[in-house]
Length: 535
Image (cartoon, rainbow, N blue to C red; front, side, top):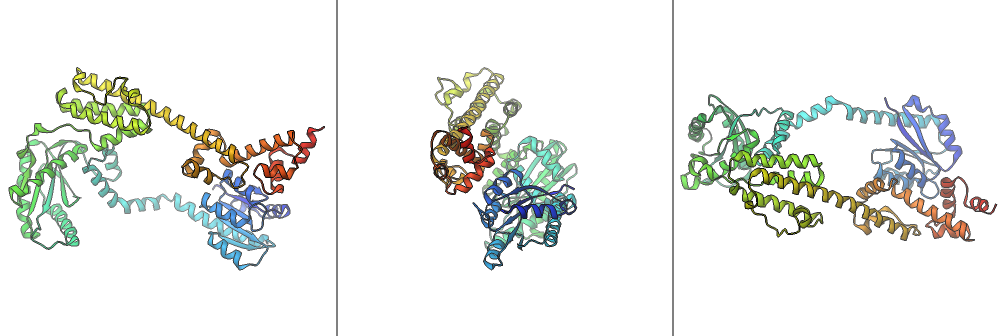
């Protein structure tokens, strides 16, 4: 098993050497991966090594152990913290416990006691590791969550929030059988209008309707799923063929009458148009909901099929919310191949509808509106996407065929994808350059921090730190140190200023800490560096 990583921080080198030598790290399952002589150095080393355990003294120069623990609790929340102190002081112990410190050990440090503490921490870390890796535990938790996940899946499926290619994958993941074929959706509503309004009773009534349908629905050649859908119960039915639709309506009529005896209330059912595949069920649900809207005119407690009331050829192809999310995500965050895949899916849908080109006008306008919004949000000129003469509108008459329309959409979307990518890259570069300018103007301030900089440029510290390290190749702290050391070298070469004055000029109030950092950076003290220049 992989050893746990330990960082040891103590300003007394003899104590560090003693602990390092006297503890049998390997047999305890640990590896001493780093040491630090003060809190500032410990924080930098921890940033690089990500230790599992930090052993630190309370009293250290430049940053004490309690402040180190406070900072580590933010940057390494999972790390175990052990504090050493030569003071039997309740206040120290109280503060340490308040920061989530695992153990508090009084000096002089006893090897046996520290071994016992490490052994205890090792058991805790082992337990945490096993819990994370215990697939049986994860599977049990997953299975316990399955009912909720299935309900969420159906909610998203019936509201059209799942992309078609996601449906079968999610269904298999949640152990739901939704085979391809002809499907239709019915929404059933319990007409309890004469009863007093009670939210709890409404929920119980919905569950009763769900249970009633699961027990009593029966139709040869049809497989059904019963799920909750807002304030209705959805009956999702796979039809063997279209001829089974009207027997389904008869079965729903039977259940509507039967519900008066079993539930004490009539059931109204709205039935949507059959659709090809479970991926299209949200469209059938929309039709079923529209059918239910007619029940006030048709009388309560009966079955209404939307196909009997609204001509099927009146359906209009629309650019739906899920389409917009998929296209936006591909253009902003995806690859060029993903952009082309989404656009291809949209144009294939256009082709499959069999609609004439003229009837696709609204769909085109909705897609163009989505692209214009993306361009403006990304600070890209719409003329760069659509051309210099773009007026904000595109006419379907500009295209001679669906194929030409599809090519035009692919070109516009690909162009926008490229422009937004460049804009992000330029934006990241400008952001880093602004940060460097801020550092150049404030490195003399001892209080310069990533939090102060992020407040100035209005970014979260976590995002900025990731971006800065990716673009510059070093952390914010390391870069500030580099800037200060470069200026220190210049001042040592070009001026006769005292070392303590140079320290103050580059942001170090403590000249001893400046000397410490300088020596760690260049391998010799500032005074010896200057002396070497004169030889």
